[in-house]
Image 1 (cartoon, helix red, strand yellow):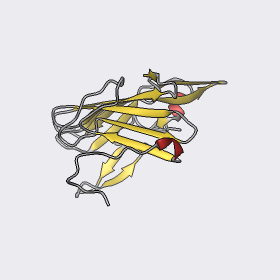
Image 2 (cartoon, rainbow, N blue to C red; image 1 turned 180 degrees about the vertical axis):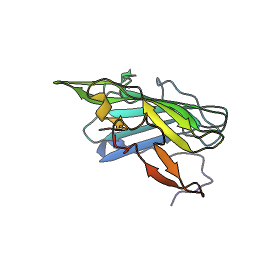
Image 3 (cartoon, rainbow, N blue to C red; image 1 turned 135 degrees about the vertical axis):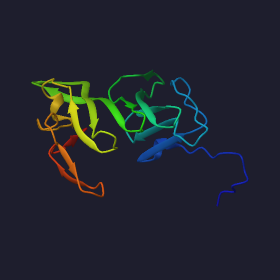
Image 4 (cartoon, rainbow, N blue to C red; image 1 turned 180 degrees about the horizontal axis):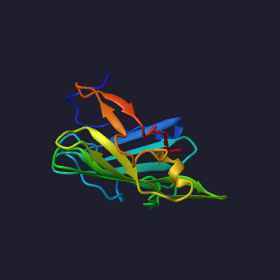
Length: 182
């Protein structure tokens, strides 16, 4: 049983584990850009599945501790770190704390070619003076990328895409939300 009063940390050999994950708050992985977090936010997260290379996410937050970006890095067995931009995400917020924009990169198939690139470029519109999402529009038009991430099925640009009852519960979502990241 670990002793909470002991300041030393036991380091386990993750090479024999089927799945390994390391969450960092007040320190970061050497060679991977990131800012330490002292307010309880996660600074970086690393994970590895046996037989594969380690993946590291670095997170950034605004002054209200809202996530503003997640940056994906690959850490090879040879010790090299690559910021591949394969699975990055960035967000911006309005004064009410609502998401205004969300941009995401990911893997998609464009014809016979498989590639990584932008799969989401979302703009959120809210009903005036509320926190109720009225519509979400995706500006990504690349063939293949539109089938990944957020897919409004052509309904995101219409009026009254989302409707709510008097209590603020979502009644109807005409966006027919479909999410595919893998």
